Amino acid sequence: MHETGYPDHFGQVVNQQRRRSGRTQEQLRAAGGPAVPTQVRAEAGLLRSPKPSTMAKYDTAFDWMPGTAARVFWDKEPTPARQVRAAGNPLQISESPVAVPVDQILVMLGIQRGLTDLEGRLVGAEQAQLQELCEQLKQVMSVVVGGWVTNMLEHNRGHPGLSMVLADAMASPVDANDPADEERLYRRWLHNPTEVQLSEALRHRFENRFQRGGDDVRRGDSPGSASESVVQHIPSPR
Image (cartoon, rainbow, N blue to C red; front, side, top):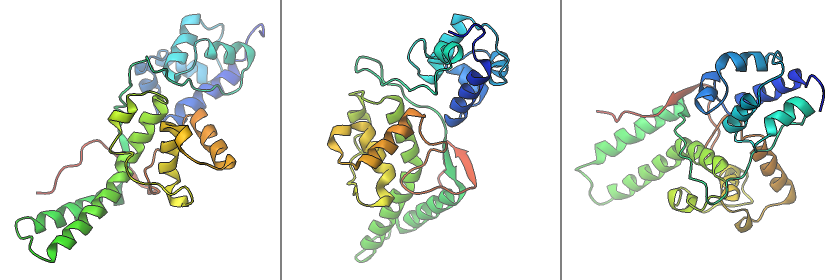
């Protein structure tokens, strides 16, 4: 243990971890982290002789094993790994907002309008048109729901309750050889690594992604736009 610790190193680690999780300092505090003024000092490398309770709060907020934050500060431990949830722990329901690309919102509203127009006048060949619109809606909604599913899996990896909660989201087939399916394949790997056949390189990439807290931007089965809105409820068109 270094006599004065490594406040600069600690500040870099907690700042990177917070930003990677997409949270503000206020949100980290709400998740069990230290008070915002303490976070400001820590991320600036100005934290001196931190209390054990402060380190414990960082462990809680970042989902680290107990004692991890203290080792980062006093022993200059590298970026720590996140702990895997044991089956006996309660399932954590993610309530964080989902970042939805604006162009995807417009597409969803357009599809909804198309379905509304067909309502009440569906006959014969129009049934196929309705099925096509439903498939389009399913694909677009995967962009919205996919980020939430990934977040749930990353925060509850190994929890048996996920099979029931995410059954519908995990039901669609995935082609391990299709690059476009990599995001869904990552979710399948998080859910049950033994049932997914991966190359060693892809398995290593998935493990690194999980350990560093997932992607900076949560996305679904297709890439998002650079212009994004944080949306929790999308109003139905009138």
